[in-house]
Length: 306
Image (cartoon, rainbow, N blue to C red):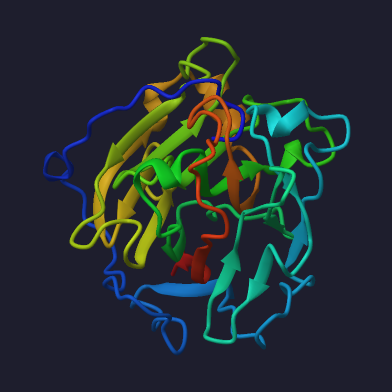
């Protein structure tokens, strides 16, 4: 997500994907009281339920804040042309006392935007040999649509561990976009970025992507569970993306050459949550873009198969 210059929308029909997945919680308009029960056959490896007091920041034992407009020595504007400045302020990133993390983009009187971007301290999220790892979050996208949503770009994604501290080795080290959305449309995008850019085996800067509409209520008006399963249990690896338990995109190890796959997946990953404003994919915000509409995150959890 965060480095593409253009995304070509890919229509994906979920019914065409015949893959069994673990049951995940159904969508609902408010935060749950606790994490969902761990499904049979899985163990909970890591989580954050965002049950802190109203107005508090994130747990910095679990998360770190990305600050400014780039990584140190990395591409300007987070590599995408987005226009906001990321902060650690509780005006932009805060727990609401109702079981949610809020990431809120704000436009000031000078028409400058601030927002929030956090990533896990841990960089070792990957399945064990012969097992499956699932990473999921229950999220309500910013509840804004139409011209008022121009430039909004919420995302839930992962980057390969070798990127941290290097900040120049994308996309070879791998990026897994679990949920992306732009401009308040009722669509969720999923993508694997890998290989070389531009072009290469993963068609960068577009990546190997798919999309679907949110089932039932729209992505903006309700919570949905966005999930990726990284499967090492078979003869070759597979990545599966789902919304509310419905798989809509698959990437198989054999879809790219062995070296590209190994470079992109032969290590752990860290998890990122953010709301960008502007950039080459959504386009710049306009004077009609509404300030202060947050992405709500009920929980983030990582499961491993037993």
